[in-house]
Picture 1 (cartoon, helix red, strand yellow):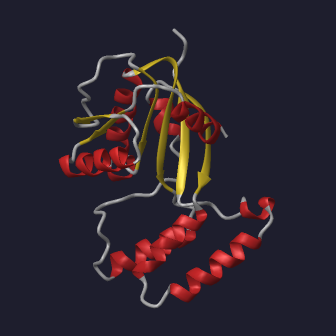
Picture 2: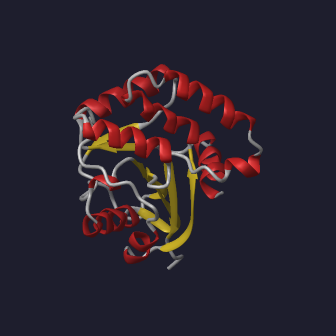
Length: 196
């Protein structure tokens, strides 16, 4: 799985890191967290649909928890903008909530039903292959991560603590092969720019 091996590898190299957000508060929180850990990064206030960044600037561009808030036409435009700032041969990595993750879907549905969902309109994805291909990028792979993280969405349901505890224990006892049967909270979609 490309994302797991290569992002860890990249994060240990002395590379320039840029974090972009439309929210000044989110940037402020991120900058504080990075400083506390002694990690250098640059923080840029910008709209993901029109980034104030030169073309062909990065080996990897990625986003987490963004595309699910947009319709497909805008998703394609966002991925095209990510591709614009990615060097030829570079990777575009997108993480979105997975429509196949049951604990996430149950917690989200419950919170929406009772008016406690704090994240606005959010459409989980089964695949972003079509969005990546429409963006002119080579589709490489998709997979899910974060099943145990998905259990946090059950917190929207009163008294779900015992269920979460049991599911955590149960999941941790499964074989690696059995764990693959239960998709995690995040769908990881990987695209690659052509070399030319």
